[in-house]
Length: 215
Ligand code: GRF
Image 1 (cartoon, rainbow, N blue to C red):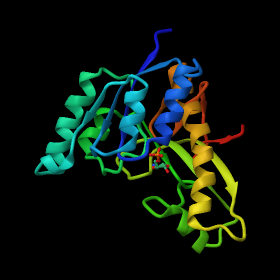
Image 2 (image 1 turned 45 degrees about the horizontal axis):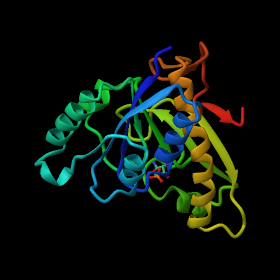
Image 3 (image 1 turned 120 degrees about the vertical axis):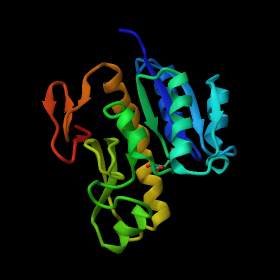
Image 4 (image 1 turned 60 degrees about the vertical axis):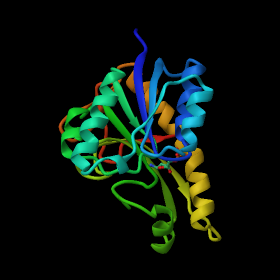
């Protein structure tokens, strides 16, 4: 099976990118990261990519007049690397419908909440404020609804009495670095697809909240 070509989009630290780089290097993912694209020139994840010998590209949204113009160029850059899968790993941009439609079923995102809870920002604090006992992270296919596409896999963690947004974020991150490479691995093995509004793994429709890690 030919390795899946990945393009990873980031805006910041890139710790999820690192987890995917490591999984590719160890042969856990049958994949090759063709490029890492950032909308921020100072994103630490760009350094991680360079250290791993991966092509990088900075496309600053500040150089464009509109979201549409930015996304049109972003699509050109993505396509120049001919990916089979586009991986959003902390890419802090709202995407236009035309970009989302172009990669539907071929674009993943990771969101630090148990979707459909807490779409958008500040998810850890929101879980604490709501006095949730359980919090977590979701990997999902990207659709036009922000953080709203079919969920593929979730990992849960308990919310502890003394947790702050920071301590919770740290433990969620540990789970992110496990479940995101796992989902990319499934995709690279052609085991994962998106149907109308749900994900399919090994020919079985996944429930609305996706599969649970550990399974
Ligand atoms: C993660 O918390 C992820 O869930 C969210 O953005 C953050 C990216 O972190 N989408 P990193 O850049 O991968 O360290």
